[in-house]
Image 1 (cartoon, helix red, strand yellow):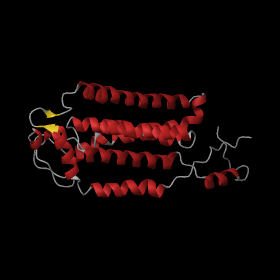
Image 2: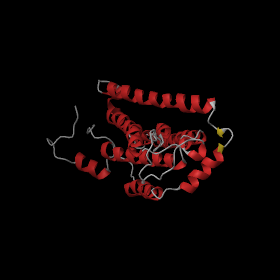
Image 3: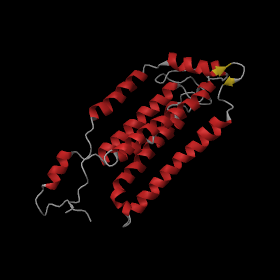
Image 4: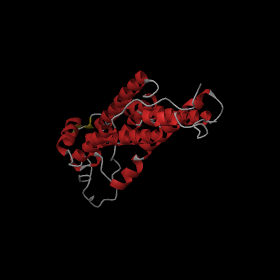
Length: 248
């Protein structure tokens, strides 16, 4: 007989899940400019600019079309959630679909306000790469300019890393599919990051910040909405009749 209680979540070490990304963020606050500039210098030619600056494939396929594909996934998640509100088979996935909409929305939506708040310049805007702006570290006040930067964190990378939400949706129901979703999200986020670095749109650290922020957002939302430890479920199942765990 059904108890109306969802299966318990698989064990997860939240201390490591939150702790390691937060530690990495503290390290990144030290401004890894040497590595950032080493990669940017390799990708930049004084005569022709960044090696990906005029690439049709990087701009039209890996940037525009790829972002549209991720947006489509988000739209499908919203549509699926709305259907789950009706008496359909998707009802059992209602909470998961709601989580997916929220986690992906926060992971991608946080980028624009952070860009406006920080005003970090893109590599292609800096004087050493053919631009007119001067470089300033993340936590240092920006030099006066008529064109504030909009490059921290990496926006296009967020399109890929926001799919980390799929890993958390699947990890308690479809572990193998969850592992595949994890590698797909990390792979796409990395590919999107590299493509924009080759175009001069971001430093490496900009995209690392995106990955860390998106992981933390997806994990925190999972902990709040989906994670159901076995101990809590045991208490729900053994609750006296009339105290109610049934759902309608």
